[in-house]
Length: 355
Image 1 (cartoon, one colour):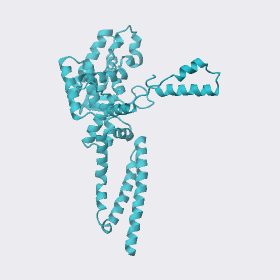
Image 2 (tube, one colour):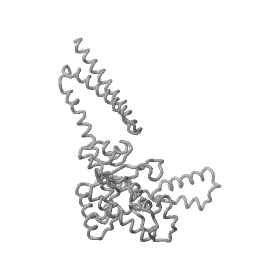
Image 3 (spheres, helix red, strand yellow):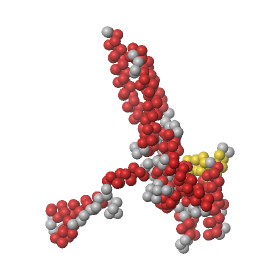
Image 4 (cartoon, helix red, strand yellow):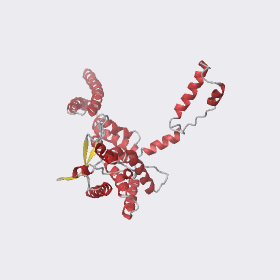
């Protein structure tokens, strides 16, 4: 706690010293001398900044291929467990958070006419356990591996408790089970509690397993790869392939675009892709300013007014509060800028006519 919250210790030190100045009855001289000698070691800000920036950096194409290749090799050789292998592979493929992976149940993996699906619980602030879901279509290889894990979980639990669970109860078992639950003396009612909640692998344990696996197969043993990096990597790969922010938000299961844009703050590649998209959309208008004003003024005014009207129509079609607020703010700024430009162009046009 001291290492993490050194500012609290420092604040406490100066609070006590100041309190002594105002009321010397509070501390005796011996205690005052002790407090005065406190030395609070502060972390290196430069090192902390570098570590934070590194933890938010997307993996390069080489790093990602090496990670997947090394994991697959170890898994096939039997030196990596199915649980560890599929935890990391699913997080790479889906970009979901550890807490979402932790909540998965056997029944969330199924086949439909148009493909294989994983029904992943959404994380909504204030909501309880497994109340909202989003379907994720997955490839055959990942589906087959998860189906094998699904069968292993069923056999494992039945070997521990016997054939006492119904088919419905078996389907409600976690997809990623906490094997340590059975290591200690457990009560049967704890197994059933909250729809087998205690049997689910915790998000903290998943985070630790992901970090341990990535560190083990990494060529650089000092490098730490975390679950957030895997999310940023997926977002960046989608952005570089030309997908829009809405698609990326859906892929990462974000409820609004603000969360997606936050990745750009620490991600040069992602920022470049967003800037490029904006530049592509406004370049025709930028190019038009290189022409003579007499030729483009009228057309530019019409185009700007059309943009303003289309933006209003776009906002009217949105029902999600988060996206609606973002678009409303954007529209207000856009409308203000357009009105100023239109006024300026009209004013220049009037002056040209007078001349």
